[in-house]
Length: 471
Ligand SMILES: *Cc1c(COP(=O)(O)O)cnc(C)c1O
Image (tube, rainbow, N blue to C red):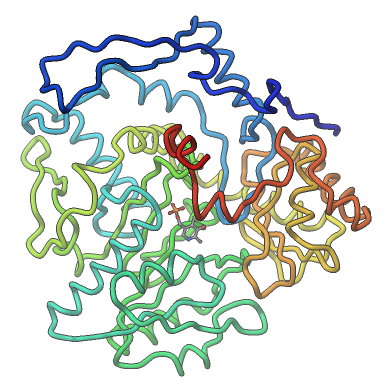
């Protein structure tokens, strides 16, 4: 497959801002005091077609899950079906969050049902829908664990996190004031029970795990792990980012996990990327339901009500969280049903294993669940990633987990069929055969070449004023 990304630019080499295309001074009249207002404002002045073209051009210079395959490991970049967008855009979804409960029973019922679906899928007893992302869910879960131990008069200072965990696990634990104990992985890429034994103590508040782990490997000893942690008085947290591998087949609650988050923008096909909006509901077992954030939804008589759980950790987000995202989650789960969810996990696992077999790069470990981690070997994984864009596919996640040299963490998800998987494999193999010079110069055919990723992440300029001030 040959790919040439659109490149729209004026003499300055980029698609101009709306205000640069055409703008005009608009007089402002307001009843506000003079010292709080300006006299005039420069606003873009464009026709509707000009506006539509601007945004279409920007989208053509980007790469998304609707451009081609997007096997970004751990992120579960599924196609987001359009029917969920239609439902979230329905006029009746525009509900003021302060409306009296008795006038928004439909809204509360939808929230209640979403929480029930998620609880059932995860094997949890109750679910809060408030946290706006997986990382926020982790932080909420850690605060619940902290409140639980404190309530029991049991002061515990440590959280154990495996070395293969997502960076947010370390950050959530540290942000809540815990010391992080890093757990080295065993030879087989899984939790090493001896190392765990050594790490656990009466200071252990929580062990955070994802299962299957970030190498796509199922933690077969999970029941024993849960017993070890519980025997020491600790709790077990499930990072739900990899739940796509288990949907309808196994439940974290049944494995012994006490708290978990769901990344609905990964597992349940709500849009993802660019920093949100997503949602990271948190499920807990019976013993912890009193600590959930408020307000919380529950059934009451024939309807639903909001209430504050007895020992609530408080609010973690405004109102009920990202409501429109939760509509999409509910709709997706309802449309797929039990059979559909089981079918999704089956295909996700089959696709990862098929692709791992096809590619020329070395793939240590296996067999896999929803993702696999290949090694770029002598090549630099970041260069491989950039070069893959030239073949019209989004690259895998690179250089993580560090257990695999030059890691290419690949997750095709269930949405791809064999034709697309073969196209992906062909892209991997084409890059594997290329020389260093070619891949170091990549990407050639994208609208932006190598960007300064560190500056983009560390000092982003997210507004026109910020850009102007920086010049
Ligand atoms: C994505 C991810 C997270 C964080 O979730 P966000 O929704 O991006 O905040 C945590 N753990 C793992 C393994 C992940 O892949």
